Length: 183
Ligand code: FES
Ligand code: FES
Image 1 (cartoon, rainbow, N blue to C red):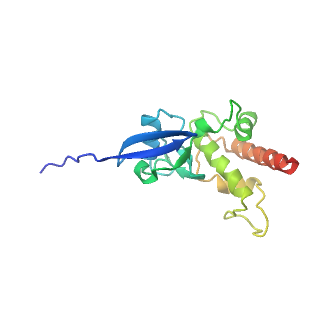
Image 2 (image 1 turned 135 degrees about the horizontal axis):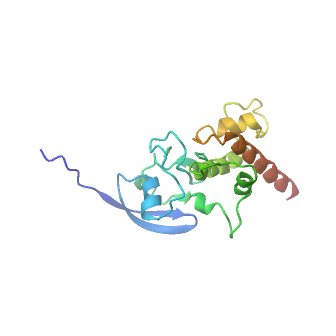
Image 3 (image 1 turned 30 degrees about the vertical axis):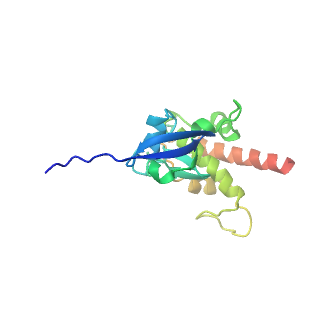
């Protein structure tokens, strides 16, 4: 019996880091492979390819998602932000700067996923979304160390740079809140 599978392709459009791309993808291709291999955006990393490590985290229509678990064909028309899209006009985001200042990485392999995930954490807290450890559900959650650890628990770091990561996310949260208070 012939066991070969004939690939099926589909045309999709993705808005990645503000640029629209028309792509012809294998319907079995993950969003991660599409970003890395078709678009050359190798910032998003393949750690486990099974949704367990978070190294491939991107922002998909504004929410964090494991790109290794998303089929590209299922996200036709989606807006994607990868680590390459976090800096604006050549300036690092407050979070990226905080990762540098607080030593939030060692080898850096998990860092793109940590940064995308943490970007979403700041946004989720600002929207008032609680986590499993939020005690007071009436106000906006305060991103203390427990909240940050819980919210970042899907992003593993083999180097164990967690102390710096938690400090960096906390520092960025404080800076973002201070800027909002001024505005
Ligand atoms: S590579 Fe996607 S979660 Fe590990
Ligand atoms: S900095 Fe090396 S895996 Fe996180």
